[in-house]
Amino acid sequence: MPSYTAPTRDTRFIVNELLDLASYGDLPGFQSATPDMIDTVINEAGKFCSEVLAAINQAGDEHGCTRNEDGSVTTPPGFKAAFDQFVESGWGTISAPEEFGGQGMPHVLGFAVEEFISSANQAFGMYPGLTNGAVSALIAKGSDEQKALYLPKMIANEWLGTMNLTEPHCGTDLGMIRTKAQPNGDGSYAITGTKIFISAGEHDLTDNIIHLVLAKTPGAPDSTKGISLFVVPKVLVNDDGSLGDRNGVSCGSIEHKMGIHGNSTCVLNYDGATGWMVGEENKGLAAMFIMMNAARLGVGIQGYSQSEVAYQNAVAYALDRRQGRALTGPAEPEAQADPIFVHPDVRRMLMDGKAFNEGMRALALWGALLVDLTHKAATEEARAEADQMIGLLTPVIKGYGTDKGFDVAVNMQQVFGGHGYIREWGMDQFVRDARIAQIYEGTNGVQAMDLCGRKLGSKGGAAIQAFFKMVGEECAAAKGDETLGPIAEKLEKALGEQQAATMWFMQNAMANPNHLGAGAHHYMHIMGITTLGLMWLRMAKIAQENLAGLPDDKAFYEAKIATARYYAERFLPDAGALRRKLEAGSDNMMALGEEAFATAA
Image 1 (cartoon, one colour):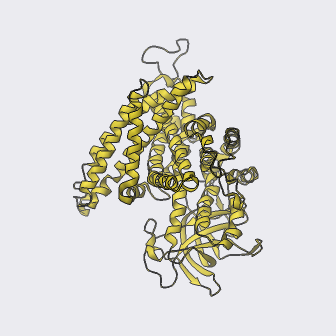
Image 2 (cartoon, helix red, strand yellow):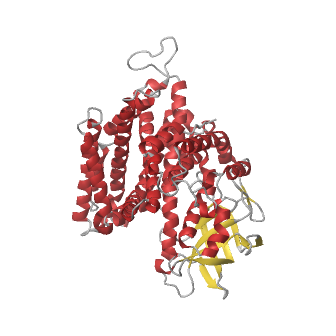
Image 3 (cartoon, helix red, strand yellow):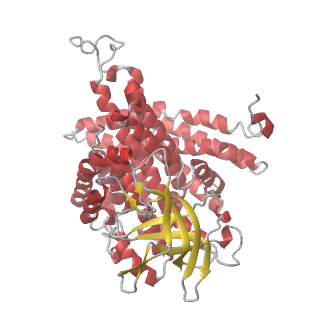
């Protein structure tokens, strides 16, 4: 049976030392995030996830969810009891606004806990996780009445929420949605249509589910400019907050999926269900993007959370499994064979996993800090800078983080050899669960186009220029250092590759937009490589400073520097190859006609 131990030591290093969260104590919401409180939250959340959620992960995958004859859904055995513990402990309220019953602590801590939950049990984590996006939209666009009616219960996780976007005939192109919203004459609307792929669309964890649904009002433009957003509760809520009649929304079926079996991904049928508009008519797309951006950061966390748990199990297996001898001579002559950990190819896969997981964790938590600073930084200028940077990084965190997270999960399965293909070891679940993160909340192709088609040129390229300046300055400051210099030099070279790729887009994409589309995926990966390189340079710098003080956990900091060197040598050079692919353009890619793709008999 697979196991999971929350990486609390590494998380505390990032939060307390790399991000130095305590230094923001004068900002709203940060006062309560003292070092002692941070350590308590991280350690206790790690304990809950390792002991409670991980224990039901494999069984949840094997059992899955059950749709009953009356349309209700039963979650896997153990999920309801674990969810009740989750709610009682308040793990879903950490970074929610105090105004509506949350703890109001920084998003950094919320993201850290979210990683632990997802590693331990990704399917379980999706139930409260999707609620966060719905809460964000209601906070930003909901009326005072809607906030008062729904948010306290949703933030407390007494009710959960969903996002209803996709329909059978449309996913990314939301302008094609057919779900209708007919005014009832009393301020409410009758919602009719079918939504698919609705994560946590129906379940037995809470008494109510608050659906946020995209639909079109009569006469609305037949495009994205005609989309409105509606709040549609599964059970109608009375003015005093008590539950009333069942609404006209039902689960038609549960999707049969490759992974995340413990989460009920539903087809939801709306048959004149009563809903209320959120925000302005025909302005639902803006509200939807609030949900999507929150969800995309969460999905980025899912990407490395699965590679983390897969990595942990691969390390344990590599230390235990004995096959062959070390190339330099027997490592344990008294044994019949050496642990496979001694073989360079196995070590390559494990080091790749370690370098990615720790680098991606640092990036995601830095992103969380930027989210906090977007709202709470001391000056308007600082808030704008943070907002600009997290806007640029969001598609990278989601797209690159989930692409590489899946790759790592596959390689960790590879460490097991044939046993990795056998279900009892659990590695197949990590691979299957990781796969969805590349697809939902906007496929990674969409993320790449968002980065290259929207974010690079936004406000005259201000965000990407700020990124280039930041990385360049940190490289320059480190180049003279004996330890950091070699890392900084390789990062500076990767940055140059990204800058050259950016310039190539500027010179060629206007004349032929297909050049942008053909190279966007490569560019997203170049930026992912560069950004994780920046994280490793920063972590190596902190580790070096700590080593000068002769710490008790000297081995931890030495491993940080060694892994930073490994990342610089093994990951950063890939930026050059990707730039050359990008500069190949789209001509050959788009040259063949449709008939050339058909298989001849």
